[in-house]
Image 1 (cartoon, rainbow, N blue to C red):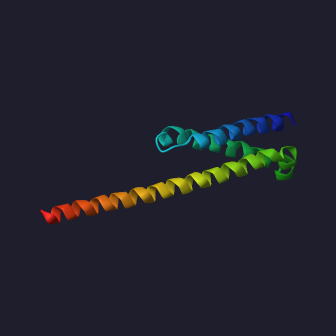
Image 2 (image 1 turned 180 degrees about the vertical axis):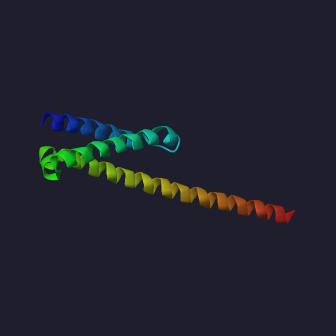
Length: 110
């Protein structure tokens, strides 16, 4: 049981770290922060899979249901980040297209 406690504690620490670092994610620091987030999420998944294999879903969930809440919140935050980044990408595409159209008009006027 002590091993389960340690794994859950480690998972919770990593989940909290990921949760807080997602809020720091911006376009400017994406390349710096995102790889660390992916690495931490991979580590969490590895620990979770190991716990589920060794102790079973019900035992792990009953032992610390809060861990599953953290995971759901992180999933929602990632979904929100993806949506925000997608919207920003569409805006940038539209601006680039408009700029290229203006450039073509300028060339035709000459």
